[in-house]
Image 1 (tube, rainbow, N blue to C red):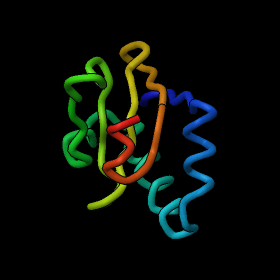
Image 2: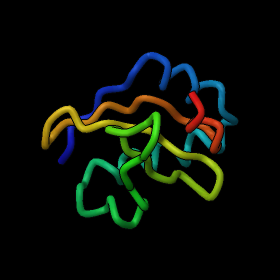
Image 3: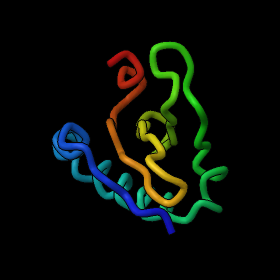
Image 4: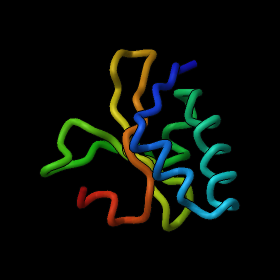
Length: 87
């Protein structure tokens, strides 16, 4: 199981999403804790300005950006639609 750290900006962004999306995101975050599920969530490395961080899908529109702090710990940095890649 991966231990998760929630960045303050992530929590703020999560709370600003519609309730249904928040619920879906929390389900996917729980699913993400098991490393074997990362492929199902389409977790992948990002490039360019976001090199060194990763992303996974909540649904077709919403993404979560995260980084691995250690092998067993990840920090959730940001959540939102594809514009989250521009921050």
